[in-house]
Picture 1: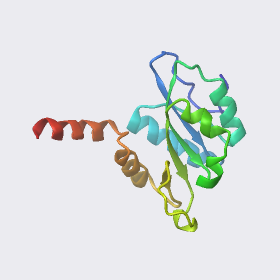
Picture 2: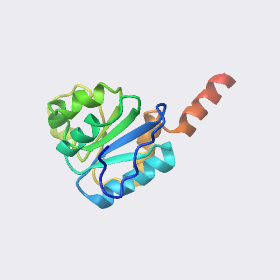
Picture 3: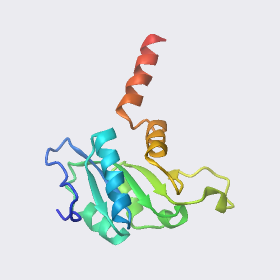
Picture 4: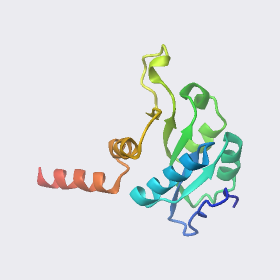
Length: 148
């Protein structure tokens, strides 16, 4: 498996999960990877380009679950990207970064979550919670359901 320099290798256990980050700025990519590792307990594969991400996904063991992908790409571009079917085939959640939803004329909701620049860790964690990806968020929801 090819991973970027300083990127943790994906777990080797078949039931393990990884997250994919496609971000050209190493500082941002590693900050995202740290946040995902600490909040989701999910190691990250980091790619600096769409092409590199495709190679990482093609080499990823099918037994390793792709939990989510955070990608710096506009929704219009991701819709036609070769990455889209690769990610969707693994049933991963998708967060697109740096797009401006008000810039599109289409009023239909997008099938992917958007994280607009500039953003901080708090906004990412809020979005992960909204998507039901944070372990604490799922735990709180199940506690409320049990209480009700």
